[in-house]
Length: 227
Image 1 (cartoon, rainbow, N blue to C red):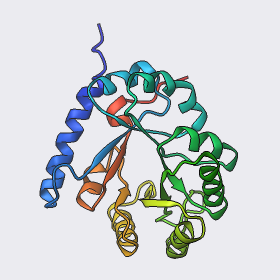
Image 2: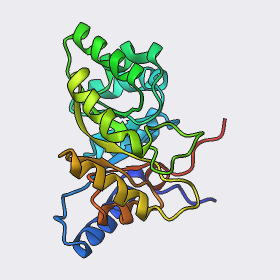
Image 3: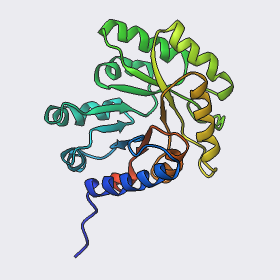
Image 4: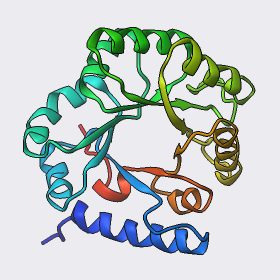
């Protein structure tokens, strides 16, 4: 007989305890960080225990996947906040604006303009985060740090977006701390309150360096199911 996989609810409690310790060590308040439970590729049966345990903030990577599995869950738990944390193509903007509460991956003027236009059409004002490519990786989405100031200003002033903060994904294999520190520095220059940074392996480091949201998938739901 094999042991059952740990419950997402149990995993959430353990992660919350680790974050509280990290926050205390950094002199931050124990409720300074929100866990965004990254439920991509996990089905409703795996997500439900986290919802039943009271967790309400979730991240999804793909618009279509979220549209397929979340409506019945939201009917049961209407106070759930859904955050789009994956790349957004302009042809999915209409659906994204209609379904998500926060979009974390604004990374180019064309997308910013499309979001502003669609929010005006739907008479909705979503919070957005700007994705910064802190490692200047050519294969990765995100605005370059050198262009961040101008792009943040354009999103606010030219497109009228409700820019709430910044997000980043540090390069694989590098110390994430300098990248988190850079993101916090850019956010501070612009008075942006939200910092979405840190995942399962480095969320405590992110918490110590100012994260307000950490995106945790594997640590909560386990390994992604194989097709």
